[in-house]
Length: 395
Image 1 (cartoon, rainbow, N blue to C red):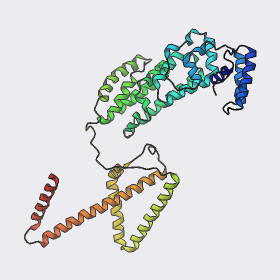
Image 2 (cartoon, rainbow, N blue to C red; image 1 turned 90 degrees about the vertical axis):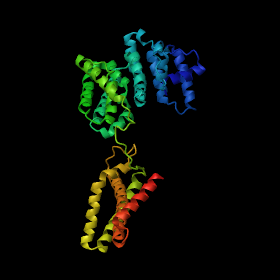
Image 3 (cartoon, rainbow, N blue to C red; image 1 turned 30 degrees about the horizontal axis):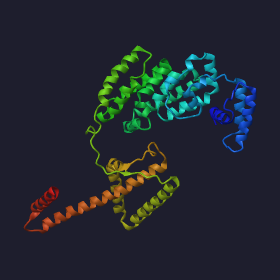
Image 4 (cartoon, helix red, strand yellow; image 1 turned 60 degrees about the vertical axis):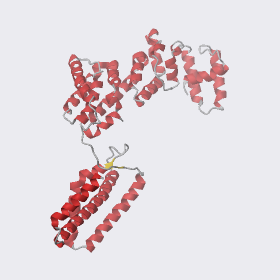
């Protein structure tokens, strides 16, 4: 429970509570201990810490706490900063430093909440208006978090197949406020990291236009960083103009060949259930192989086995196209998931083999009919099939 929540409880009974008055502190302690009996959120240790804090500080932070933004932060609320409420800069630097240290946990929680929400714009407003009360530990933690996210962007760029993550899990990569915040904090410190992202974008720009849309969005957002060096400032401006052209490409146009392959979404049954199902599946496959080995002659068995293997290799890309990963499975390289995907592709391969066998049987049947017929001939049969196909297609 936050200090302001303690104060709210106290002021219900003692509306004119004065933290600088020892008598009021004694009354406040009694009020809180009475409430503790009916409120499980009130811990004795927290009450003692609250009273000790005000014995040491009294009304030291009374003026600062008139700031409505800080009141909400100390209550751990999720809200948008109203910069017009700020009264921090009018206070002595020593008082601001002490406040930042005494309420470091609440400030840390608010920073992390905005990071979790990907609300870099609000975090930027908070930083610009309240940086004097962000102590060294909180600032250092924020810098480390941003560096980690910069590295996440660099880790995605070599892998075009993962670019969709840039607009989902890694939305900060295309958020101009994310990069502007870095120059607000310390443009000299982040200058090299931004240069690295810019260089990576240049290195991986030789891709199809569909992927360039993602790179273009990053280039545009990156230009909001107020670079420490003239060299980087010029590069960002130049590349943002190129990026704007890429970002405006219509991603729905056939920049990338449309994939008409039917997809079957992967389902998550849980690790234990999937291991049981995989054990049953591969046991049945093993029994099937043993059955074929005894049923077919040795040469025929190996013909079938090698044919299946060759078909699997030839159709592997298409089989992968049928398998639509869910968001939780992306990046999962566990043996269980690899076996799960292989089992799916193996089953789909059997469907292809059945279709291929049917087509082959029809083809051989037509040839047999052509040789058996004395009047129509092979050309006549092909002509009849072509006419039927044209009629069906027109309908």
